[in-house]
Image 1 (cartoon, helix red, strand yellow):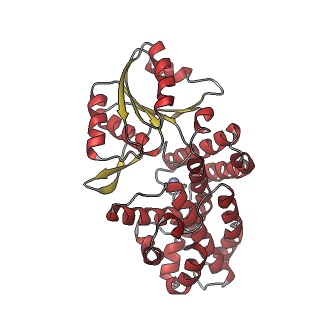
Image 2 (cartoon, rainbow, N blue to C red):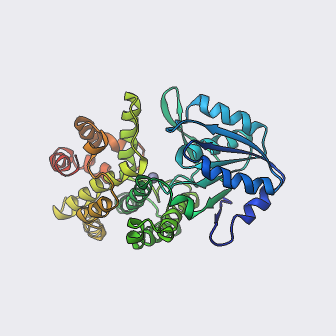
Image 3 (cartoon, rainbow, N blue to C red):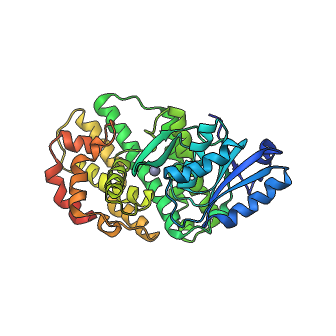
Length: 366
Ligand SMILES: [Zn+2]
């Protein structure tokens, strides 16, 4: 796929600067990331690049058509598009670069989500969220000192996205057990190892140490690489992400601010862990039941994961992030329809358990 991940601490961004030397580079940034754009702009200037700034004064940038049009104009007259930012700016840069047939890069300013390396870009069109297929970035420039300056909620959200790898990998195994869906061993192992490394760095994350932040960032980037490796989002996205997408659509329909991706994923993970525990503890009759129960036993207890999330300041109830109670009830019933992918939510639906589990889910997670 050709995504080059460069860590400033190690070799610096030299290979990147060499690749773009003398080229016309469009740099996308907003009011929050402007100080970091300044540093990389100087380095690009020194490498003989011609810079076009695409600056957004927005504190809460939304990837709407008109915002993208501004970036597209600059991209069409450039050789390379660089985003200095997190989710939104990265998605916009990948999108406009793909349309212009150019390579893109990103300098992440927060370890907030796992989409940096992905071949998807979440954009807004006619007020709706759409996900376009785009080229992944050619370069990811990781400067842990930049990322440690991000608001703590963003790091907490990134950790929420990583705990989601417990349930998305379990969903993959569940589908393998029930439907015989193949598992891509290498992609699975890559994501699992990255998750474990991140869990091992937890205490450092609480203290906002740059080494731990780099481990978290690396795990989030591995998510993208493992998806690229197996050709779909199975290694990084399961029932916890489907809950997040379901809520996102509801927030967007109401025209309300959408809470951070990783925060929603973190709470969704607790819901999914509860469901696995419920299936295992109640020995719900199903196909290949013993293998299903064994899988349930491998997962961490939701109470323990909740404690970790709380330790980083993550909300752990949907009511804390503005979700309406009825919407959570609808989500438990319908989120399995968000993607055509078998997860624990599909299992609960197929086995007629939604009504039975809803009161406890509301009690614990609303
Ligand atoms: Zn995610």
